[in-house]
Length: 364
Image 1 (cartoon, helix red, strand yellow):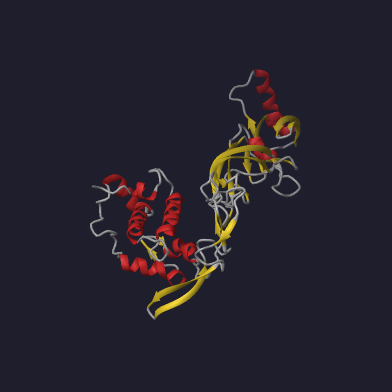
Image 2 (cartoon, rainbow, N blue to C red):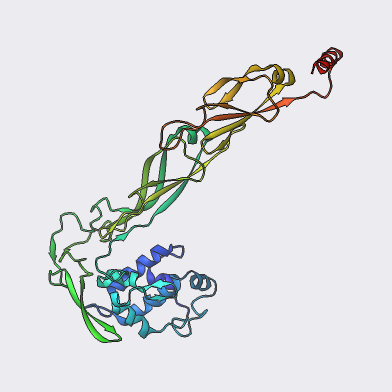
C-alpha cells in the first residue's frame, strides 16, 4: 500500500515548503534516536516523508505517481540511512551537509543547538512576505495611505508568542537539569568527539513550562489576519517596493520576525507619460501660433496651466514647465513637465487663407 507522506508529517497536501519543513523539524525533535524518548523507526519514517515532500521535483512525482515512483530503496538519489544519521548526529561538524537539496545543518541545528554556519545559538527568522498593491497614476505621484489585510503566521495573542499557558509555572528542564546545555557525542572521521550544545528542549533557558499554551499548542504561533496602514511615499514608481521591517511571519519565541514587502504596480493615465521624475505630454498648435508665438492652456499634474509658445517654434520641439513633474522620492523638489509640440498643418485651406499664405511665402 502506498505511503501517505502528508499524513506522516501531519500536513495538508497544499502545505508550503516552509510548513513541511516546520512539521518535520517538530517531529524530528520529538523522535530523534539520540533523544531520551526517541524512536528510530518513527524518525526514519518521517525523514523519508521529508526527503520527498521537501524536494520540489520528488514531491511533484509523488503527487502524480505515489510513493513507489522511485522509493524501492527507501530514499533514492544515492542517499543511505547511515550517512543521514551520521550527518544528523554530527550537528555542527556536518553543517552545510546537503542531501537532495536539503540542508541538514539547518534542519538539525535547532535540535542539537548548532547553527548551519558551524556555531551555536543561531537566531532563526520568520518568513518574509510580499504583497502586491495597485495604485492610480496620481496616487503614486503624490503619495497615499493604503490598508493591507493578509493572513500569516503571527505570535499567539494568548501567550504573546511564548508558548506558555497563562498562569503556568516554569519547571527545571529534565533534559539538561537546568544547565541549559547538553553534552552530545559527534561521530566524525576522527572518531567520537564530545561537544556541548544548547539544550533543544528548553532552548538554553534551563526551564520549561509546566503547561504549554492551549491556543497555539506551545508553538507560540497562530495563523491569523493582520491589518496594516501603509504610507505610500510621493514619487514611488511602478515596480518599486516598500519594506516593513518585522511585519512578516513569526516563528514563535525562538526567532525574529520576517519582513513584509509591498510591491507597487502603478496604473497609467491618458496623456501623461512618466520618465523618472519628469512628466511628458503632447500639445498641438496651429501654424500661425508656431510662427507668431502664443499662450495656450494645458493639463498638468497640478491642474490647468498656461504654456508660452515662443515665436518660431518647430514641430517636435519640447517646452519645459519647471518643477511641475513628480515629487522626488524621499527628497525635496520635483521633476519637470515637458510638452512636445506638434504643428497642425491643414490639408485644405480656403481661398482667403491660401492668398495670405502666398503673400507670406513671398515675404520669406
